[in-house]
Length: 251
Ligand code: PEP
Image (cartoon, rainbow, N blue to C red; front, side, top):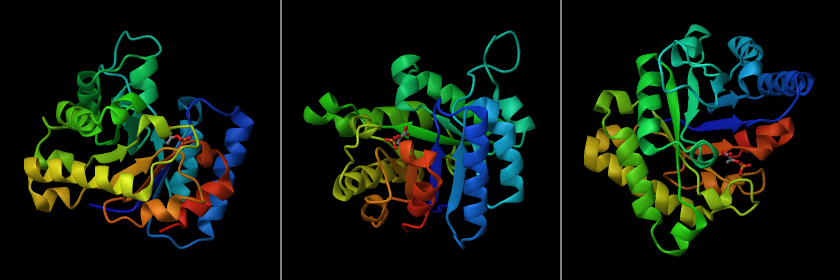
């Protein structure tokens, strides 16, 4: 179901004590506010259990940042969707631009991960977005269309309802350069139109599309005010409990 969502992606940051402090602070502060927004905290794997234990007593969810593209077995260093499901993890980021760039993940690899997650009852937070050269060459719509089609469009209308999409222009990630509300709305509406074409309006209206890329307490309101922007995937600003909470309060 389409809901407002704010998900924090901690990436590969924080030692155990800092992670413990941060997630406890988020849980405490969240307990003091009334919000309809779904809040998800995605820490590095070693802190997932800690996060998930706290989440189960508070009003947020724990999410993973990645998942293996194989079932359980001899894949040293990997973590399977079955393992995440066995820990009651409900969300997992897939296709983040950093995974595409540093780990050469293709749209097909991401499709495999999306399928494994759904098979195990975990909601994928599927990331898509263009690099600066692609936007400058006016190819951003085609790039995002390809990513969405190749990674998601083998899903059924029922399966896609469990996917959260995050539009993250790569030029805005960690750069302090945010898309304008108009740029975000334009791409989100385009993604929704692709979903409508493939699955019909009833389905596309139910899918949450988040914006990601240097979203912070100062610009969140302008971004979230747009009709097809259903929240944010937050990197840097999710490492500070006050900033994260301020973003959650920006609807
Ligand atoms: C991200 O990594 O998903 C992200 C949006 O990062 P930042 O908010 O730091 O740009």
